[in-house]
Length: 295
Image (cartoon, rainbow, N blue to C red; front, side, top):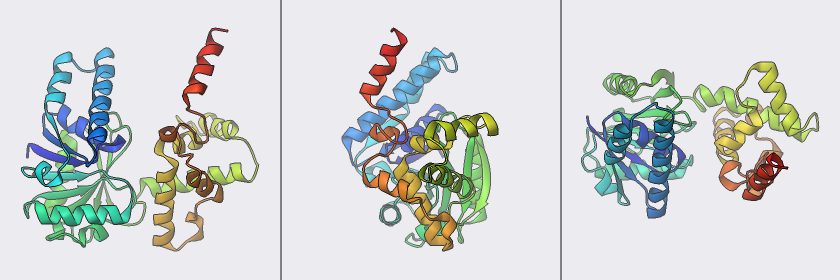
């Protein structure tokens, strides 16, 4: 098990590729967009440079890590020699089912197929795969190279062999695996997303402002980041998708997304990725902050 394919070169995908490559695995990073692959490698390089500057890794480790990653725009070519495929595409049910159906068609029947989904049923994803016992969830946390937790989600048909292998592999890349069962949102987002949603409701109802809500949670609850800032970091569209999955799965109104969140996503205010969410991340705002520092 030295060849690992990662589908999706976005934030999670390039972080997963970075992590496996740093631990000596041959990584095939796959995305239909050549531009996304270029950006993904640039992000990995930047993150490695930061680690070198902080003396967490050597220059040689950085170079070896980058040499371990090959990029592909063809799924079939990228997964050809993979023993494990980790899907890290957008949190969309139809897209993930399409990808796993394709993987079932082009991968060897014993290739382990993992999804980085943060909320979607592993059992549902496995339903389109031949030999569904080889499908498992590996929910990495963002930023992947730094965060230790990986939720390991067992689908209804996931075999003990695949579960044990995945847990062992997670430990080999210096992560902490936590086994959970296959219910909407699993553990992390089943607890986190209602808190974020309630924070948005608190803002929506005019109880307090953005900075005030985040300050209460940081100073009062010892959270390293306020829930609204965290929502911006995750992506408001991702938060909305996860809440919709849980709302549909549990049929419980407590998971219904706040109207403010829905409107912000429809308006394209997605957080850091769009330059604006609950906070302003635009270049003009950055320039304003720099100007204040020297005024």
